[in-house]
Image (cartoon, rainbow, N blue to C red; front, top):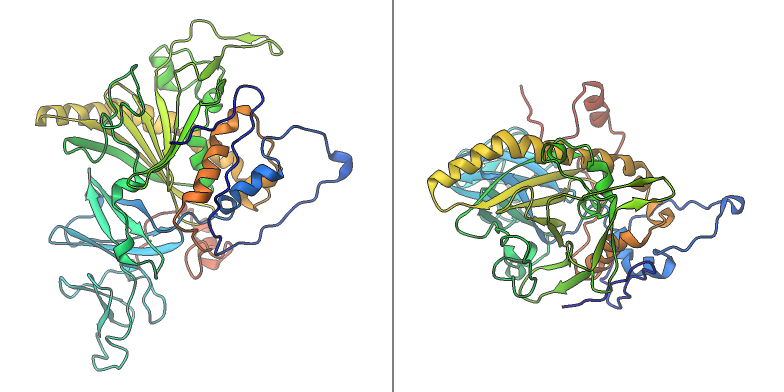
Length: 467
């Protein structure tokens, strides 16, 4: 366990000496400020600090060789085929006899996405609808070609397969590089939050019940996912940004519960955040909110505003590789909110919002579903989190060309993203290469322009071919 965080008003993020190898750097356009515009400032993210998270700055397309949610179980029925894109990698999913298979959704022949017009002649294979190249679901091998069954290419090539783990109503896929050994794939729990009450002694939380975990046998997960129009890093840093309470002041869930929120929250202790890199567990950071390590800001004398009688929901956030947020005790007791920010391209991500609760009986399951449908989804996942979607989009232009990481001027409340950037830089299993030959690799392609002209929004699922 590593507790090395900045304190109070003189925040100086910890130095790290371990940095991962950056294998695929994407050139970014650097802006040179005119000296007449320059103003002296004390920056938390000076060049020395930024040098400690260069790999993170290069990870515009995400971290590869990690587990990501791909679809809800309900979105992939028996014998159904769907295509998604994660970290710039096209993936086709098919469920057969209850088992989900995941393969690279790019035919080796001419690069066609097989999921665009599913063609399956048996339970063992999936075929490309264009020229009939047929791949084994388990191995990815090219088993045959529909109209050319004696070709010498058969049996000599194939597509990459991806391990799958289905739990709590979610299908997770280990999105790997083609050469990443299957025997080195870690268990799913390594890319999920820590478990409670199993970790309660390590991370005490006396103010609320133990947070449920999706790996608990009696856990029920209900949620949504939708496509966000920004880079995944901008999205994930918004998720645990303790200074952005301001944007939620007028939310319906806040007002309906008569909550009074502080103006902000800032760190006042060197141990306000704990980072951990477990050999047999997740890698992440724990923010010790609602403790004496952070203080609420109740007054801004310059603006003549103050907050009296703060009355809000007690919660705690923690964040994990490859980009998973856990919010304990939110939006109600005995519920935890999980969020994933799944990279699609370098300017879109799939925003997963899942509420998890432990239910001991079928009656409790139905009560949770009813509460979720009538209150929690409309007020918490949509109403409350809609503000976050808009906030992320408002930052995208600044970070979109890569220059924002150099130009941003961070303050002491930004200790959380700085700590995360360093941790992610040294502990990720690989940096996704810029997408090649996939949706979003060419920003002004005719297909993207057609979608815009037809009013088709950015999407996560493959658009099916109909003819």
